[in-house]
Length: 162
Image (cartoon, rainbow, N blue to C red; front, side, top):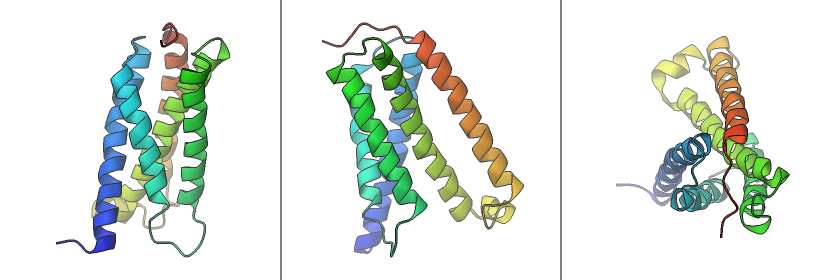
Protein backbone atom coordinates (compact mmCIF):
# COMPACT_ATOMS: atom_id res chain seq x y z
CA UNK A 1 0.00 0.00 0.00
CA UNK A 2 2.49 2.66 1.19
CA UNK A 3 6.27 2.62 1.24
CA UNK A 4 7.85 3.61 4.54
CA UNK A 5 8.32 7.27 3.56
CA UNK A 6 4.90 7.45 1.89
CA UNK A 7 3.34 6.19 5.12
CA UNK A 8 5.31 8.77 7.11
CA UNK A 9 4.17 11.57 4.80
CA UNK A 10 0.57 10.33 5.07
CA UNK A 11 0.74 10.31 8.89
CA UNK A 12 2.35 13.77 8.91
CA UNK A 13 -0.44 15.07 6.65
CA UNK A 14 -3.19 13.55 8.80
CA UNK A 15 -1.64 15.05 11.94
CA UNK A 16 -1.39 18.44 10.22
CA UNK A 17 -5.03 18.40 9.13
CA UNK A 18 -6.14 17.24 12.59
CA UNK A 19 -4.09 20.09 14.11
CA UNK A 20 -5.87 22.58 11.86
CA UNK A 21 -9.27 21.21 12.91
CA UNK A 22 -8.37 21.28 16.62
CA UNK A 23 -6.88 24.76 16.20
CA UNK A 24 -10.07 26.08 14.63
CA UNK A 25 -12.03 24.76 17.62
CA UNK A 26 -9.58 26.32 20.10
CA UNK A 27 -9.64 29.68 18.31
CA UNK A 28 -13.44 29.58 18.31
CA UNK A 29 -13.24 29.05 22.06
CA UNK A 30 -10.98 32.09 22.38
CA UNK A 31 -13.41 34.19 20.35
CA UNK A 32 -16.33 33.25 22.60
CA UNK A 33 -14.15 33.44 25.74
CA UNK A 34 -14.50 29.76 26.60
CA UNK A 35 -11.63 27.65 27.74
CA UNK A 36 -11.79 24.42 25.83
CA UNK A 37 -9.08 22.74 27.88
CA UNK A 38 -9.23 19.30 26.26
CA UNK A 39 -9.23 20.78 22.76
CA UNK A 40 -6.36 23.08 23.72
CA UNK A 41 -4.26 20.18 25.00
CA UNK A 42 -5.10 18.19 21.87
CA UNK A 43 -4.08 21.18 19.74
CA UNK A 44 -0.78 21.58 21.60
CA UNK A 45 0.04 17.90 21.02
CA UNK A 46 -1.01 17.91 17.37
CA UNK A 47 0.67 21.17 16.37
CA UNK A 48 3.85 20.08 18.12
CA UNK A 49 3.71 16.71 16.35
CA UNK A 50 3.10 18.45 13.03
CA UNK A 51 6.23 20.56 13.38
CA UNK A 52 8.37 17.74 14.72
CA UNK A 53 7.34 15.20 12.08
CA UNK A 54 8.00 17.83 9.41
CA UNK A 55 11.71 17.54 10.21
CA UNK A 56 11.53 13.86 9.25
CA UNK A 57 10.46 14.58 5.69
CA UNK A 58 13.09 14.09 2.99
CA UNK A 59 15.32 17.13 2.44
CA UNK A 60 18.94 17.66 1.53
CA UNK A 61 19.15 21.16 2.99
CA UNK A 62 17.38 23.58 5.31
CA UNK A 63 14.09 24.47 3.65
CA UNK A 64 11.57 27.26 4.34
CA UNK A 65 9.30 24.56 5.80
CA UNK A 66 11.99 23.79 8.40
CA UNK A 67 12.19 27.47 9.34
CA UNK A 68 8.38 27.54 9.68
CA UNK A 69 8.59 24.44 11.89
CA UNK A 70 11.22 26.02 14.13
CA UNK A 71 9.25 29.25 14.49
CA UNK A 72 6.05 27.30 15.14
CA UNK A 73 7.73 25.26 17.88
CA UNK A 74 9.07 28.44 19.51
CA UNK A 75 5.60 30.00 19.42
CA UNK A 76 4.16 26.79 20.85
CA UNK A 77 6.58 27.02 23.77
CA UNK A 78 5.52 30.64 24.36
CA UNK A 79 1.84 29.61 24.37
CA UNK A 80 2.52 26.71 26.76
CA UNK A 81 4.52 28.92 29.14
CA UNK A 82 1.86 31.64 28.99
CA UNK A 83 -0.92 29.16 29.73
CA UNK A 84 0.62 26.89 32.32
CA UNK A 85 3.63 28.79 33.63
CA UNK A 86 2.24 32.31 33.92
CA UNK A 87 -1.44 31.30 34.05
CA UNK A 88 -2.48 33.90 31.46
CA UNK A 89 -1.80 36.79 33.83
CA UNK A 90 -1.44 40.21 32.20
CA UNK A 91 0.34 40.20 28.85
CA UNK A 92 0.67 36.41 29.02
CA UNK A 93 -2.98 36.15 27.97
CA UNK A 94 -2.05 37.92 24.73
CA UNK A 95 1.04 35.72 24.37
CA UNK A 96 -1.16 32.64 24.69
CA UNK A 97 -3.69 33.88 22.14
CA UNK A 98 -0.92 34.99 19.80
CA UNK A 99 0.82 31.65 20.12
CA UNK A 100 -2.34 29.70 19.36
CA UNK A 101 -3.42 31.86 16.42
CA UNK A 102 0.04 32.17 14.87
CA UNK A 103 0.88 28.46 15.08
CA UNK A 104 -2.46 27.71 13.46
CA UNK A 105 -1.72 30.26 10.74
CA UNK A 106 1.67 28.67 10.07
CA UNK A 107 0.02 25.26 9.66
CA UNK A 108 -2.63 26.72 7.34
CA UNK A 109 0.11 28.60 5.43
CA UNK A 110 1.92 25.32 4.78
CA UNK A 111 -1.36 23.60 3.86
CA UNK A 112 -1.97 26.30 1.24
CA UNK A 113 1.56 25.85 -0.12
CA UNK A 114 1.00 22.11 -0.34
CA UNK A 115 -2.41 22.56 -1.96
CA UNK A 116 -0.92 24.79 -4.68
CA UNK A 117 1.79 22.19 -5.25
CA UNK A 118 -0.40 19.09 -5.28
CA UNK A 119 -3.92 20.04 -6.42
CA UNK A 120 -3.81 20.24 -10.23
CA UNK A 121 -6.33 23.09 -10.58
CA UNK A 122 -4.46 25.24 -8.05
CA UNK A 123 -1.07 24.28 -9.46
CA UNK A 124 -2.24 25.43 -12.90
CA UNK A 125 -3.11 28.85 -11.42
CA UNK A 126 0.28 29.28 -9.74
CA UNK A 127 2.85 26.72 -10.87
CA UNK A 128 5.79 28.53 -9.27
CA UNK A 129 3.82 30.00 -6.35
CA UNK A 130 4.97 33.46 -7.36
CA UNK A 131 1.82 34.20 -9.36
CA UNK A 132 -0.97 36.53 -8.14
CA UNK A 133 -3.51 33.79 -7.22
CA UNK A 134 -1.10 32.26 -4.71
CA UNK A 135 -0.13 35.64 -3.27
CA UNK A 136 -3.77 36.73 -3.00
CA UNK A 137 -4.76 33.57 -1.11
CA UNK A 138 -1.79 33.81 1.26
CA UNK A 139 -2.25 37.54 1.93
CA UNK A 140 -6.00 37.15 2.47
CA UNK A 141 -5.33 34.27 4.86
CA UNK A 142 -2.74 36.28 6.78
CA UNK A 143 -5.04 39.32 7.05
CA UNK A 144 -7.87 37.07 8.22
CA UNK A 145 -5.68 35.49 10.88
CA UNK A 146 -4.46 38.90 12.09
CA UNK A 147 -8.07 40.06 12.45
CA UNK A 148 -9.05 36.84 14.23
CA UNK A 149 -6.02 37.10 16.52
CA UNK A 150 -6.83 40.68 17.51
CA UNK A 151 -10.48 39.81 18.10
CA UNK A 152 -9.54 36.73 20.12
CA UNK A 153 -7.07 38.73 22.18
CA UNK A 154 -9.75 41.20 23.20
CA UNK A 155 -12.50 38.62 23.69
CA UNK A 156 -10.64 35.92 25.60
CA UNK A 157 -11.09 36.90 29.22
CA UNK A 158 -10.77 33.57 30.98
CA UNK A 159 -9.46 33.12 34.48
CA UNK A 160 -6.12 31.40 34.84
CA UNK A 161 -6.16 27.60 34.57
CA UNK A 162 -6.07 25.56 37.74
